[in-house]
Amino acid sequence: AQSVAQPEDQVNVAEGNPLTVKCTYSVSGNPYLFWYVQYPNRGLQFLLKYITGDNLVKGSYGFEAEFNKSQTSFHLKKPSALVSDSALYFCAGAERGAGSYQLTFGKGTKLSVIP
Amino acid sequence: KAGVTQTPRYLIKTRGQQVTLSCSPISGHRSVSWYQQTPGQGLQFLFEYFSETQRNKGNFPGRFSGRQFSNSRSEMNVSTLELGDSALYLCASSLDRGAADTQYFGPGTRLTVL
Image (tube, rainbow over all chains, first blue to last red; front, side):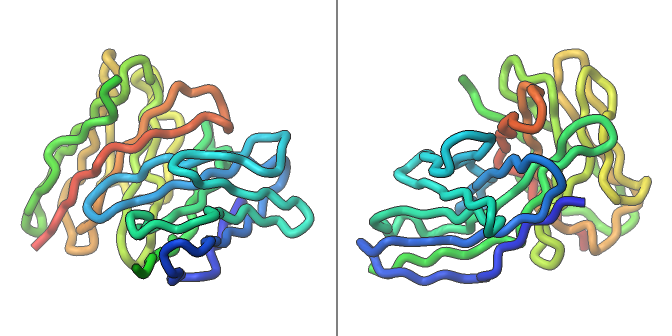
């Protein structure tokens, strides 16, 4: 079975500094990996995904993610953090179920951007 | 295009009651998935529907059920509510193009069981 891990429950970063939110995965076969963000009392918003090809994936709101097969990682990054980036971030992998694919999520990482 | 909508946004029920939650997918999306989000267990997959058929089911008791209508709208039902069912229930829709398909989430229904 596939698993996705987010080793940090919380990440604090100063506004304007680069940010990284970590994710590692364990899958058999090709990984399909996603990043979502959740603001308080809201659903999940899609940021970006890795299917195949370039290891650097660009997404919404200036976010990007680096896929590293040898380290089985898919870290989310942004060159310059904004206070409005403060939210809960989830890494997920698409896993084959009985008849379709389902998302398996990490536990989430709370990002706090300090003004 | 309108996003995924879920109704109601908030619900308060008592133990033993049943509840029905509704989800309207993005227009043209035929796959609808449901997830439960709790502080302790995180996000867990409940089930997925496509063309009115349940194709995939997570590890939840039979008290959790769902259905999908011909217009792709979906409902989930929880019978004999327990305190532990208090959670944010999220619905997601997709075009169903395989593993690489993006699921788009609604705002969720916050269920509180007293």
